Image (cartoon, rainbow, N blue to C red; front, side):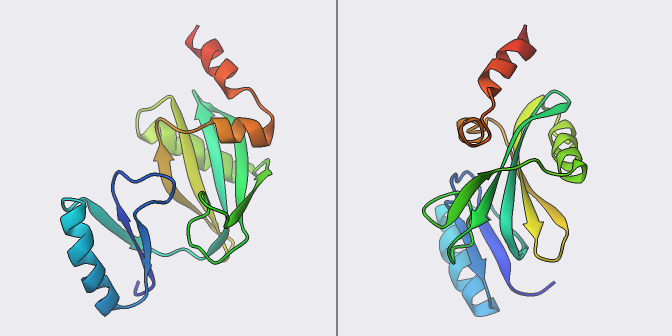
Length: 154
C-alpha cells in the first residue's frame, strides 16, 4: 500500500510506541532502534487518515459505553495528551457490531475497542484492549460500566 504507514511497538499504552513513517529511509532508521528496544515485537500497518477514534466498551454481547476522541491537534494519536477532545457518542449499528464482533473473535466477554472513523467514510478496527481503562468512557458517556460488570458477573 505504500507510505505513510504506522509502526507500533507491542506493549505500549496511551499512544506510546506509535510512529507515523513517510519514507523507506525513515522506516529503516526507526526499525533499527525500535526492534532492539522492543525485542523485535513490533508491527507495521497502513496509516488511516482519521479525525475521530471511537472507543466502544463491550460486555457480553452488547455495547455498554461509547465515546469519541476528536482530533484537535496535529498528533496522530487521539487518546493521550492535549491533541484531542472527548465527546459523548452513540455510534451507528455498523460501528457497534464491529466492536462486538472483535471482542467475540478474541474469545473475550469484555473489551475496549478502538475504531478509527476514516476520512474516506469507512470504519477501521484499530485494536481491542483487555483490560481496558473504561473509567474514561464512564465519565464522558455518563454510564455505570463498573456496575454493569458486577451485574454481568452475578
